[in-house]
Length: 222
Ligand SMILES: [Fe+2]
Image (cartoon, protein in one colour):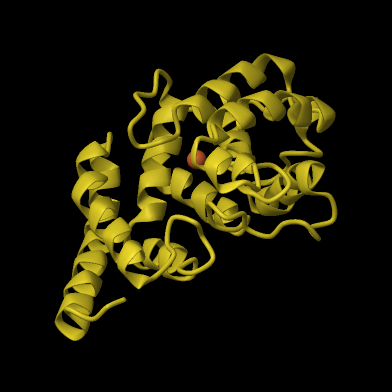
């Protein structure tokens, strides 16, 4: 794909992407001091993993990697403290996707991202959740990668590490129920065959973890 010269400082070589992505993210979160997870979601460390997953999902397809890269880094700023409501009632109704759609264009413009690609980034962000129906290839790649990120050992880590500090998982039981729902609902929502193949070992890992929890803890998980 032809790179636009103005964007090279931001999106240089592929191996520079995580660094460039951090710069992009720093426009929202400053020097990182406030990059702690909010009550709702996981930390900023998921962006490089998510972007790596988009490369695996998109392998062999012709798509705009700049768009997917920017969307992967900016799809979820509204889940962090300082960017989401503190009050639990407002937080439960918080539209984190709407927030991302509002703030992402300004961040991208400030970073020198090509103006003509911003709409495509926003569109990919808009449809990145499993229940969405992406209208673009870039959106479908991001959504499939986001599903993969929630499965397997990483999906387990994302959930269990937040038990007790994420309002959705006050204790182990809620965390396990969440993982059971992930296992039941997400694999069927995958769009691409390549993603289904990538998901297989992750699904097996999650199944085996949940079986072990049931065998060891029932009925006293807490
Ligand atoms: Fe999200």
